[in-house]
Image (cartoon, rainbow, N blue to C red):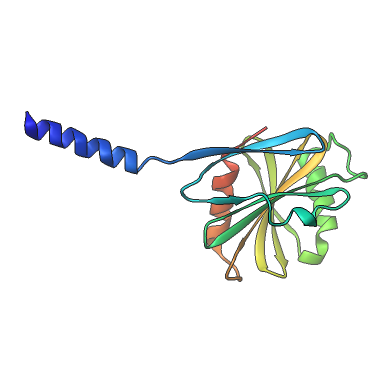
Length: 168
């Protein structure tokens, strides 16, 4: 009986120590709730204060997730010349035109809690991936890059993992 109790205690400790601490972050802009991101706070840190001063006009910085290898920035923009009811193809064409200086290349439509269009970009931080969706009249976008710079195949996987936790 003692062995059974010890075994049960050990299994309980293993289960508890391996549990993920899921946290929700709700991003809002201009009084509108844009989305909620559920993420593992043991794997990702969230910073919602460092770049608040970079919010200007129609661009709002909402936060940054990071894990020591990747940084994922979350922002929202309101584009006066992009209809709020645009579909994924219209959003993709519009953003690739707007981001053409970064060699924007559409990769795929990824349906998580919102339908995201994912792009590959080449900018000052090297290669990054950019996922955008429409929410309450805003283009909400996540951009992931390797903090050490350069191309990184794992970044796209990490971005999709975070997008899987997004809900409207």
